[in-house]
Image 1 (cartoon, rainbow, N blue to C red):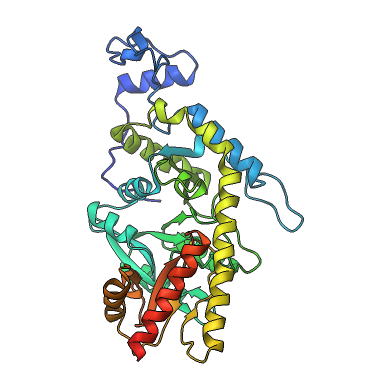
Image 2 (tube, one colour; image 1 turned 90 degrees about the vertical axis):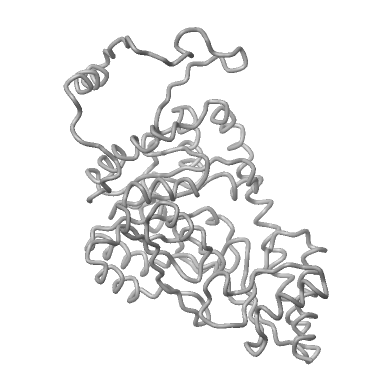
Length: 401
């Protein structure tokens, strides 16, 4: 795996090499230039501990996250059907402020300016925006809908081949937002094969993984993938339904040599941006204690609203006026509604704003390839959610009148 030249991870100078060797041998050298005030009794009373400046984040926080993952997801334990992903080692975790920051770090790790990351369409525009900020190109690959969503593997292979070595990663959202599609086993096997052939990494965003709606059997996390260099992203924002709890993490897995080299470069990126503060990291164990309860609470809400959505759409059809459908969504917080393509998405959005004082996200926000789609959140309280659906139905009927 060739990493970007943005990160100067060349050979150490003799002094730095000697210091590293002494540390590895368990006899770290004293520091004549130690400018860390927490090493000299100058930390404030409310933050008395020493700041370790570990580029991967405080070890205690990483250990707590690793323990949570291994215990809650059966990592390292063989299932009845197949071996589970290996237990996560805290040394393979990077704790940072958000998965958005993780995307930026990985773009800098993998891509020189002008090189590319493949990103799914339809999809949330975050990756493209971050690529722009990091002088990286975002090249779309398509998903198609035929009763359920699937990856256009041919478009991925074409982009890798035509990139002639400039495509450095394939971003996979598992499940996707807003399509709700998980990566299927056959798709995963093919993506690993393609990534290996074209010397690309996998970036797997799995923040919505636990919020299943209408899943197929056999879904699995990318986290712990051993076949190719893989960076899986997760965090508290979705797990705890707490976007103001900005803690995310990267788990690095794959062939041992690739992982070691990737982590060497990532350490330098993280160190330049400064590791997560102890003040935040100290809260992580307590937040993890809430994770199971919070995840189930949100999952119950979105599943209940999904069932209510089907009921409301069925009732509208039985009235003789029903023209709105919901596309199958395997997981996540949002679903796509489909209405007659004779209705312009902007016209419907303006009607929702004018007649009902409601804003919306039409399909073209996510680069849907045709007109007639609207994303709706499954998070509102049930009474508000029912009202939202009824407003959409009324707006569609008015547009058709």
